[in-house]
Amino acid sequence: MKTFPMMRPLAGQKCLLVGGGTVALRKAEKLSSFGAAIYVCARECADFSPFGAQVLRCDYHPRLLEGMDIAVAATDDRAINARVAQDCRARGIPVNSVDDVQNCDFFFPALVVRGDVVVGISTGGASPALAAVVREYLENCLPVGLEEVALRAKELRGTLPAEEYKKRVRELFYAALGQEGGHGKD
Image (cartoon, rainbow, N blue to C red; front, side):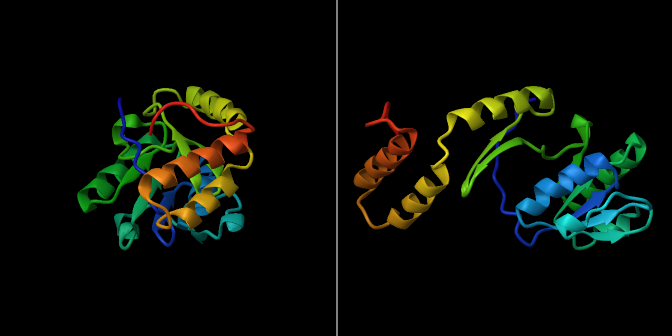
């Protein structure tokens, strides 16, 4: 399935995470690192405290979706995950149902994060393992100083004419790579 890679700010967004196991923990880690407020719905669960999650020790009920911006169904029960997806869709809440492509409105990409530069790699749920291999490759290709390049580019934005700005950003990028110039066009 072809997916469009939309980037969405998550700071302050409320996320209901249904499930308390290892998979849910990994999703909480990703979401919280981008500022989402995590609410975990599970009777028993792992330690979500490093992610600032509020743990609701209960079974899933649709009323838990009230006020939520996104949801993730990460239980080991496909029927519960499908029910969460159905309830979310009825309320217009984007949902990810782990390992169930048909019940996903969005996917968790493999990420390369260098400050404000975020590269997401997705296979539309077809092969997360392939996305992870591509992520490893890109992590090794991108310059370590990319975060600083992004900060400098942000500072320069609006201070130079467009063409000069593009040229300067390209120079900064290739300098971080330890190369001169650049290749190709914008």
